[in-house]
Image (cartoon, rainbow, N blue to C red; front, side, top):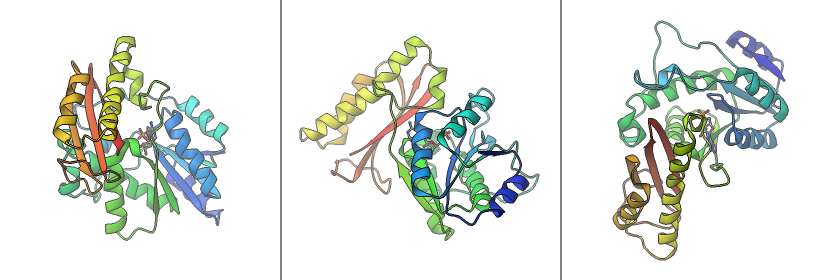
Length: 271
Ligand code: AMP
């Protein structure tokens, strides 16, 4: 594996290749969720590039940019062990003056974007840079960040980008908690409380399997299970992210954001 720290070195490495590239952008502190993306890329491409960059542009001023968990040496070994070909760990990728990608407000001011205005602009701006540098054939993203997937797909389509976006299933702990670098913020008690998220989604799934399709009734049950956690949102949407009152099997997504102590966690389930 080659580790590169500058865009110049990345370009030089990539110039040596004439291969299909799979790309996995991350913010590091790698876990088995990232591993599944990397493995999928490895299985579908001749060459896999992983980036680790805690992107300041997607954090709001009051968010956890400074304390976001980092594990440089562990992440390098993690990628090495998985057979990653190039690990790109840039220090910075921004200039003093530069254009930005603005995510359409119809998609990016709801749900995550309502609580985190500007977040998706930061995501798209950095991805635009990385896509230009890496020139991947396929890029891998987790359904854990379902709204992000949708906003990225919208950019790919709108900018006529020749990249195939590959959605990957959510990887969970054995007890159901979706893996996330931010889980490292949880103490023992909060870790137990965080299980309520998956429990509420499982309850919703069970209700739907038993024929209940009314999102208000399902949401009420979910809120009961989530108590006393502070709920940011529970939302029922179709695949275009329009709100729905009635579940349509195979076409619906239930999304959750809650605070466990000060830590904000997200999860979702595709029905
Ligand atoms: P992050 O490092 O949190 O920015 O995540 C990098 C990529 O890994 C994103 O595409 C995430 O959606 C994906 N990812 C994070 N956690 C999981 C998970 N538990 N299962 C599947 N993909 C994940």
